[in-house]
Image 1: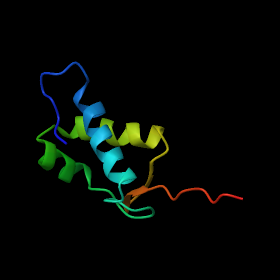
Image 2: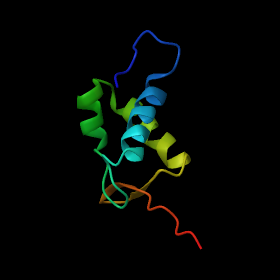
Image 3: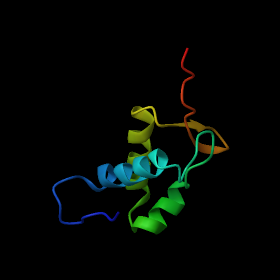
Length: 81
C-alpha cells in the first residue's frame, strides 16, 4: 500500500491507514513496537511532524500507546468475558 501525494487525504492520514492495516494483519503484533518516527520518515519520505501526526492519529484511535523512553506499542486487545 502506498501513499498518494496528489490525493485529497492528508499524508498523515494515509500513513496512519497503512500502519493501521499492518496492525490489523499482524505485521505489528499486540504489545510490540511500531516503527519509530524516524523510520516512518524514511519509509514514506515525509517530515517528522507528518510522521508524528500519523502516530498521534493511531493513539487517538486506540490502536497504539506511547511509553516514554521506550517507543510506541500496539495496544493489546481487550479480553472478552
